[in-house]
Image (cartoon, rainbow, N blue to C red; front, top):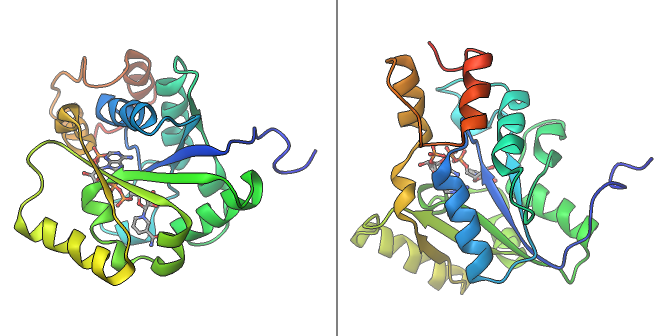
Length: 211
Ligand code: NAP
């Protein structure tokens, strides 16, 4: 069986990129809102490998983050979880992921890339940014009230340099954050209703985030 044999082909879909350490309702609500707004066939959640730009904090093993993402998305038929990045050898760049997805789904596929606005605002420093901005549409997700003058200036800079608009989406439930969930676990505080129950069970079962 070939590497891509089990993959369905889509012509209009989004990639939801993130560490998902752990995945929570903010991520799920964001993905569903973007799917609905842009009338997408699917959202492919793409947990990162242990990312190169995050050397200051050890991320939880990608095996756990992948499985928690599968558990969290299981009830939504429009959501899938991809192992492309966690299985790729070496450093992973988004541009490689989008290239690989184009190879699988065809050059005519319309691809959106959703992630946190703080990450997207750094896009000018990403690997092969010009190719990347040509290959897909970017959706910057934030909680409401995130954009100030500096943020707007950055978006203007991207637009004037690459003639490319970054779509924005404001999602109130993005007030939930993975960092806060990890801290709550460490401090013995409740995480109920911040993420799916199945993910909470998984975290407790494997004693994740306790130190
Ligand atoms: P991150 O550390 O996981 O998240 C940065 C911020 O965005 C956090 O506030 C996070 O909140 C939020 N966030 C993350 N994923 C989100 C999502 N899908 N929807 C809404 N909010 C989200 O993210 P990261 O590691 O910087 O990277 C995000 C994506 O950008 C990844 O797919 C990564 O591979 C890509 N990236 C690529 C390059 C490159 O190609 N050179 C460089 C940087 C990032 P939570 O903590 O609550 O999740």
